[in-house]
Length: 75
Image (cartoon, rainbow, N blue to C red; front, top):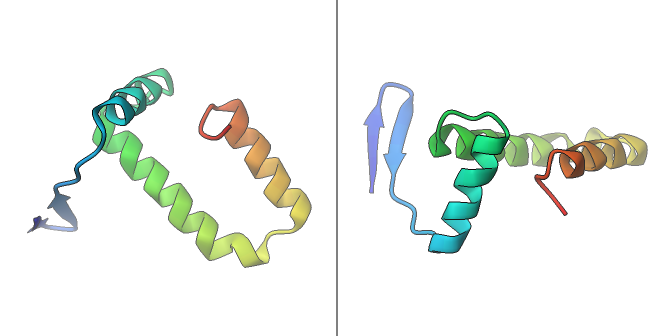
């Protein structure tokens, strides 16, 4: 279900409870004020990565992956 509100939509997403709890904790640790804020950030990163993936050099890609690892976003 999606409800339009200005430039945002409300969607319902079913997640495994353990995944949700881990994501909430990781978001708090990273300084996000809400799960919604953290999830929006992650989705933006994924979409942006896909859009720019072809234009990144292998060195740039590795640098970004290392940064995401250091922040705990990827293993």
